[in-house]
Structures are given as structure tokens and as C-alpha cells.
Length: 312
Image (cartoon, rainbow, N blue to C red; front, side, top):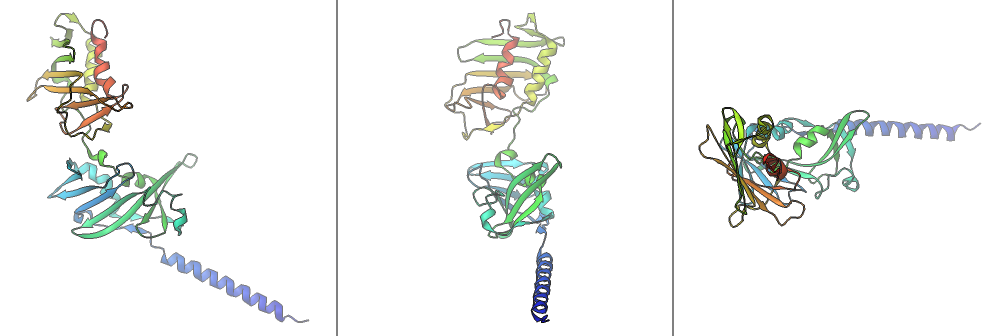
């Protein structure tokens, strides 16, 4: 019996097995899980390009502080807000490679158009260039997955999903969203005006609130409204840089203790049918907020009118 063909087949299979094992071992040893390992104290600039922002913006270190810059807008950024972005860059590691071809970039949302691009600079030297992609949450396993690649490279990496959320930065997240900076218990009077000349006043006397100085107001309910008012935050921002030339539809002026000047909140009409209101406060003069009729506008103005005697 001629066993030569069988022997050749076995040798070929053994060679294929050894070659496959060697390739896998080599591929495994060449996988570097470290996507970013940076001394964040030496970062001077982060340039971010996102799908939602449309145009790039910068986070620039100025002395020991940070600024967010887009066009002619410059916003001071609290160090606590920067930590959510800088922290992951200190030691960012991938769990594994999920794709090595560009054909699957759209699947993982890491195309140049879909991803958030973060370019990190030390002086003029770019020390990291990352594309942060999609986020997936497994309801059954209660685990989150995120995807990322290095700019100019085809490999797609699996990373911790919550890190993806931290790195998908937007310009608006660094903006001040509060309208006011005061304590509700310091307030002693509220004056409301509309464009037709109507005025309503609620004042505090002996710890209780009164409408027009006479009729008692539900002080507990009004205190709750004021607490919500001083804590109110805008969600959307207008691209307008000034309210000059706009005519206010309504305004609220707040008086009280520990205030250098009365707080003034005004609302204007917007030409956006989805967000028909623009809201501005002298407590946060840099921001002009947008609102639909059920959002910030209701919280500030519509809810206040329920305290008028006629509820209008």
C-alpha cells in the first residue's frame, strides 16, 4: 500500500496548522492596546471636530485655565469640566480590534464624517489624533461598548463605551447653562412686564409672598417656583451674539439681598418654528438660549402666570 500521498497530506496540514498558529501569535503580539498615553498637564490644545457642531472648535490652555473657542466665541471652561475629557486621554486602552478594513468604518461610526475627531497638541506637535465613533449598550449584559480608530489608520478598536461618551465632546457642553447665580431665599420681589405694558408684582412681606402687596399668594408654591427659576438651565443655544434690536415679549426683574443689581430675564420671538423663543439673562449675558413652548419658556414665564389672580 502506497502511503506517500497520505504522508504528504499530513505534512501539508501540519504546515498549515503551524503557519496559522504562528500568524495568530504574531498578530496577537503586534496588537498594542494603548491608544493614548499622555501627560495631560503638558497638553496645550485640543481641536475637536464633530458632526453636530459643524465646524471645529478648540479647547486651549491659557496659563492654568482653559478656554473653549469657536469662531469669535471664547468661553472660560472650569477645570472640573475638562477632567471628563482629559482623564481618559491619560491612559486610553482598547480591548481588542474589531475590524481591519475601511469598509466597516460606517458600521462602527468611525468615518471621517460620522466620528468625533480629537487632535491633541503639545505646543505645535500633534501627539494624538483619534476618531471616536459609535456607542452600543447591551441591555441584557448591562455592558457598554464604544469604537474608535486612529486617524489615517483602518483598524477599528473596541473600547469602554462610557469612555466614548466622555470623549464625544461638543462645544455647547462647555458653555454656562444657568441663567442666574443667586439663592431663592435672598429674593424679596418679582416684577413681570409684557410688551403691551401690563405689569404684575409679587413681593415678600414677613416671610410670606403677596400679589400686588395685598392678596396672599400660595407661598409654598411660589417658593418652589423661585427655586426652580434660580436653578433653571438652558439646553439649546442661539448663534446670535446679541439681543440688540430685538423687542422683548415679556420680562422678569428680580430684586433681593446680596445682589449688586436686579436680575433681568427677557424673552424674544424667534423665527424658528420648533424653538419659537429666545431667552436672555443678565446673569449669563454671553448666552442666548432657545426654547420651545414647553421647555425653558414654560418653566420661567408660563408657570409664573399661574400666580396671577386670573391665572393668565
